Image 1 (cartoon, rainbow, N blue to C red):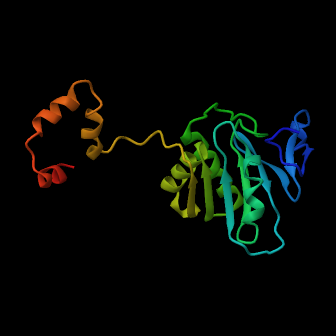
Image 2: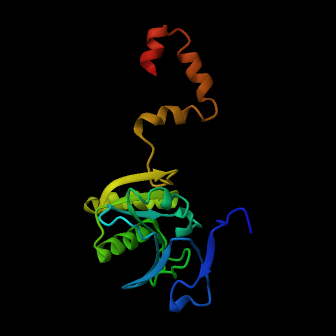
Image 3: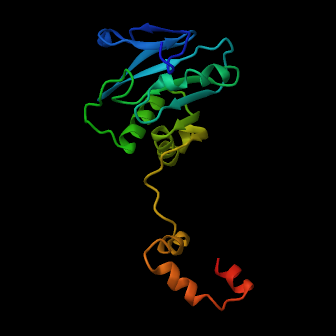
Length: 195
């Protein structure tokens, strides 16, 4: 057993269409396949003993799968009714028909899953790429998100804030010595105001 496998996992087929591949399923988890127009998603769930808990959806990062959440899901099982999705083309979910692997494409898949299941608003968890996807879902469809929890989110689409530009300019060759010469006679108060 590798160091990345959970000791209490077993292999199981996720759906008849994927009998060739097997997926890891931790004790107490169930897999189901959700067919939506243009894509099919594999969803991992931990059916709880307490009905009426608020729903949660976990979204994995790049190169991951819903299995990434198998350790956290039981820890929150008394608080939320958790499900984890395999994004299109990851885990046991086949690639999307349109071949769109962008953050927007994945967000669209999550939104379609939530709309189809009628589980919203959910506590939405996202890690890495899943954090970027979850952020996009929350921005586009805030009605589907109760809370947003981001774990090391990959947010590559953020543009540099205008206030950070002077700091970035200091990285250019020759700018730092020039700035030092220009501010050499500044008082401590002027330096603080300049920052």
